[in-house]
Amino acid sequence: MKRDLGRDLIEGLRDSTNVEFVENLNFTIFSLVDEAFKALSQKSSFIQADKVYFMPVNEVSTHAMTSQSVYSYFLGVANTEIELNSLDKKHYLKNLWKRFKRAWTLARKKKRKKKKVEVEQIALVTKEKYTIDDLRSDIVLNISKLLTNTSIVYEYYDHISIIGKEDFGSNIKIDIYIAMYDEKNAIFKLYDNKKNRYYNVSFSERFRNVKIKSEECENFINMIKIYNSLFAKAYSKVPNQILIESLLFNCPNALFEKDLYQTFLNVSNYIRMTDADAMRSICDNSKSIFKEKLIVDVGAQVEFMKLIRLLDAYKI
Image (cartoon, rainbow, N blue to C red):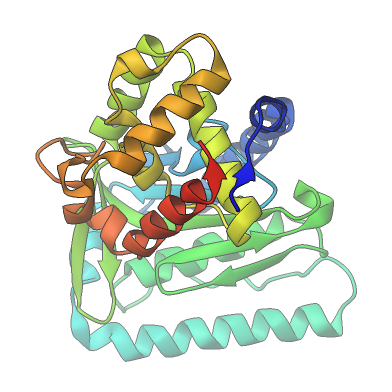
């Protein structure tokens, strides 16, 4: 027996996001990164504060947040020397060991001292080549100095994660992906340590298409919120945003009405009945959704089938 998905529920999901909180937290995170790089630029010849590019890349950008959302950002630094140094593969194991020692030392100090961690300044100018691994570690050190001792900063091979109730609020997780940045083409260049190569990520066309669609269809952003909330309620996670945005972007404008509930019925039936291979990526109209790296690489094909099963379970 199918469950009923009524008007009150759909309209309630639209209004469940505290937009003011999202905006304030977003401002706090931008300010944190800005302050960290101001300090870093004073101690490093590699870093210029006006060559740092920082942007939200998931539902933060559309304010379509849920209680399951992670605040995800890309941080790009425009510096050709760091970019080339990072491709020197002989430094991989050395940098890996260096990051491990830094993380271990930081953890030891936090455990030993129940007050704000005083991190010893590590000289940035050394005989070794300064790489994106060093950059990521130095970002961790500088951000840690700006947080209370209740916050924790984790360093991974391509991003850092921050959790801190006192600094940011309850149930908040922040992921910042560290990349090089191509200013001319507005491209983030994520480094793959294992393969010793960069792969390019561009959000320009995506954000342009989101802007166009939201101006043409007043319920476009609301539909992102509703789909995120329904998916999170069923699976305890938010779906890949480029997948959701792409599915909704492919829906004809005529399906988006002033009435929110009718719009939900229209687009949900369209997505359920349309061949997925015919859907185009919001990041690149020349690609189908399952040819888009930013969708496929995060397992969103599985998420797509979960979304269809979820919609099929309701009376739509």
